Length: 121
Picture 1 (cartoon, helix red, strand yellow):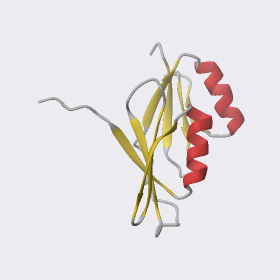
Picture 2 (spheres, helix red, strand yellow):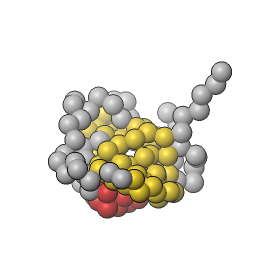
Picture 3 (cartoon, one colour):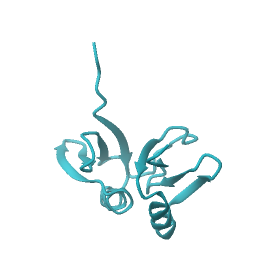
């Protein structure tokens, strides 16, 4: 039996701000949208694969989500690590740097951490 990872879900408080962030920071664009009774689910992805990030906005949850200690994250590789780093610094979303490991993290509008890794790692 084999399993294929298809998406990861992040609940968001401001769907427009999240969509803007993910497109600007990582080039992820809306691939599909579902309107459900209690909110909206939007899937974003890019042309590099089939994996999607599911952004869920719930009508009755206007407050920030408690993300604990942010010990979980989604990771992205890039061929232009330095260019990505400069872009994210300019956006003000770099939240943690680990030069020893050659990686850094960015933070989305809801506090989710996303790891940025050079493609050759």
